[in-house]
Amino acid sequence: MRLSCSDFVFFIIIFIISCHAWALKPHLLGRHRFKSLFHHRSVSYKTFYFDQQIDHFGFLENGTFKQRYLLNAQRWQKNGPILFYTGNEGDITWFCNNTGFMWDVAEELRAMLVFAEHRYYGESMPFGDKSYSNAKYLNYLTSEQALADFAVLIKALKESIPGAQTSPVIAIGGSYGGMLAAWLRMKYPSAVVGALAASAPIWQFIVPCGGFYQVVTRDFTNGGVNCSSNIRKSWAAIDGITATGEGLQWLSQEFGLCSSLKSQEDVYGFKAWLQETWVNLAMVDYPYEANFLQPLPRWPVEVVCTHLKFDTGVSDKQLLHGISQAVKVYYNYTGEALCLNTSQTATGNLGILGWFYQACTEMVMPMCTDGINDMFEPQPWDFQALSDECYAQFGVRPRKDWAEIVFGGRNISAHSNIIFSNGDLDPWMSGGVTKSISESLVAIMIDEGAHHLDLRYNNNYDPDSVIKTRALEVQYFRKWIKEAGRTL
Image (cartoon, rainbow, N blue to C red):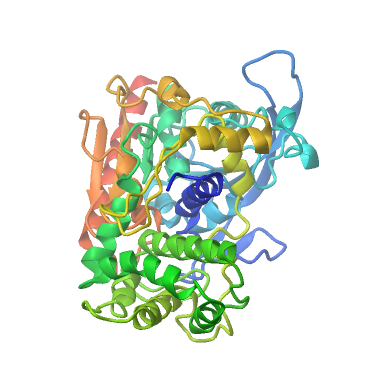
């Protein structure tokens, strides 16, 4: 079948999930202090708002907005480095609370930490409540404008904070934030001396569309015998079972759904929910227990696959019983959930509409499945379907090759001082830089690494690969800081 508009929306949501699946949603306590549910770490910061230009590239719109940023200078020494997080498509407090690597190395480097919020997300709304009301107000939601925000903010911080005038700044980000970190170094090399771009698919615009789901499938293939093949078989089993009203009722009860399936449209949504679940699990296949919607076990993909060992000859109902048990590893590992809500996924309160708009303009990332090289139903990429959906939703059409033109595609060898880190379990490695380009454009592959594992807090269960990766990243930081000192 061809990729429909609703299929495209699903693929857009998948990118948002990937950017945020690693991050817990902390409870807002009414003060600027949160505790991580992973390791009982607490972080403290001060919240500031910077008067930022709405339009950096034209002169007709002279308005400003309040860009939020979070700052911690407890470990910082005068003229010491600044680690600058390039905010993703969501509330910046999530990333501040969960980018444990920055907090872990702040004392070692005597670094100031700054977490800058991306325009149109969290509290940084250029037009307040009207920001998402129409295409006129959304027109300034672009990565180019966001990068300019970061560069302007860095200049202002260095000028206004006593002792920071000569501080070297290193950009750090994960997923879309990692893309922004790399692009900030490329576009504004005077603003940052280097960048760590973790799990940053800067080439997702130009790689074959099927790579992402092929990596997801490989994770489940390696997770257990017959695991991915039984997931591939499950789609036809769902279609067969749900062909009757009795089957719809059985499937709803088997999965313990909060709302029973009543139509084929419901079945489509159910299958999209399952597909998203498998992707989520690949994103968060960490070597230690983590807490997302529910607590997850160590290496959750392996645990899921213990329920999917069936050989040939099982009935559709037996297969789908295994699928239901596998899904409950993600949604109900503790057994405390009364039912499963198919609208409850990792997306939560993330910036879905904002990212959808970005994908409808410049962030065009082709994605597809074929059901042969992956474990999903065939969904070819259809740019025209995307364009039509974007026009219907926002009155705009995407520029297919714009990201490649603006950021250079694979032709980035003229740049310097960027680390591209990717985990071999992370589906987004398919669009990432996985081989070093030069001595200062360095690719690091993390064995047994899920989505930007290196940006998470240190953990006793961390594999040696990520321990060595973090040490190497700090080594490069020190090198960049030292080189910056020589040029002053």
